[in-house]
Length: 141
Image 1 (tube, rainbow, N blue to C red):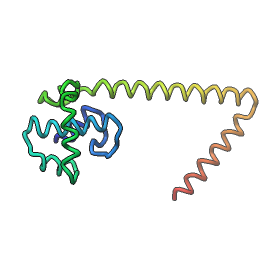
Image 2 (image 1 turned 135 degrees about the vertical axis):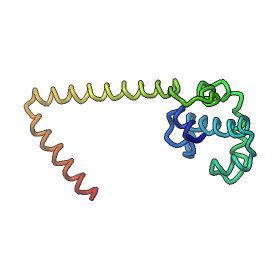
Image 3 (image 1 turned 120 degrees about the vertical axis):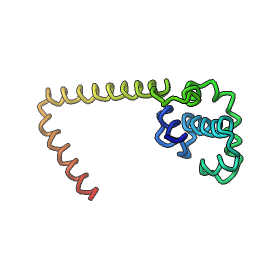
Image 4 (image 1 turned 90 degrees about the vertical axis):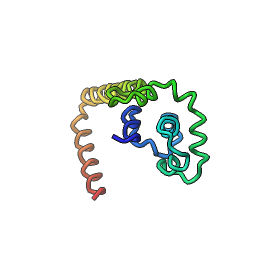
């Protein structure tokens, strides 16, 4: 498992080199840059190329975050040479938030279906949903 894959496993991010400005992606890229240069002692040019950047300034900006990065649990898991077995606290929190939203959405749909059944229109709604799905599938082809 390479450095990129280890960081993706630890942080729960699918592609750390995704050019997103979302904090978790920026932190993951900063972890990569700091680890490459501070721990592996790779050069700036090498790290810049591996990260897919043309200019050095992006990597230098990521390196400025080293003091914040070195206290993160993800950094500690990365520096520990063992294979990452647990995901970050952030990922766990994100899963909980997503599951809560899913439960909320399902409760909303369930109440709508119960109401439709009370009104006697549940079968009609089912037929319309099936028709919409059929049309969408045909449009994808």
